Length: 228
Image (tube, rainbow, N blue to C red):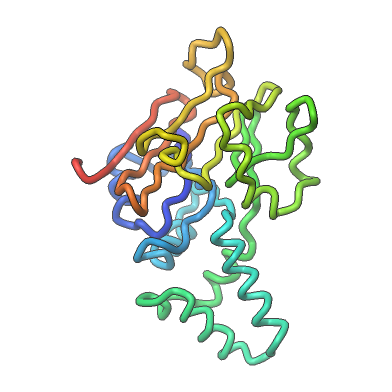
């Protein structure tokens, strides 16, 4: 099975509970649509856990991108790598000592999108032409893919056969609860991923205490939260 989630923001305990909930195994695949860092207490611990998973596809979100901008700025000012790492560790109060160069390099190597046969994963949104068709993602700049705030609007429905998974802003900000929002195509049943225009994944785990994921093969959503 393939499970997709987004915006876990250092909630390592919630993440582990979610894996238990779906009975995640070595034969399954995990896809993170970015923002594993910051806000929560265990960003570095969670990042290292995810990087150690061989069956995980990890994307950069705006919080990874912001961290990288800070890192690149430091590298332009000095060649003292020990000092750079010290400042990067200070970026994560309380757990900075866990950050090493291998983790920094892995964050820097994160892609900004993932495209499968019938779906696309991105952090914030995909570029659309005037007709609402998805433009080639390879031509998009990282800023659009990690910062876009218009794609979340319910009226923005990408044309084409692929469903777009994204996060970045919480579903609660649109007036709903901490639940995954699905946008079903006209006349579709919702029993396959291509039945959806897009799926909004961000359940605001760091403030709601609820983390959800979507299973590609069954089109089911799974959640863990305070009441579990």
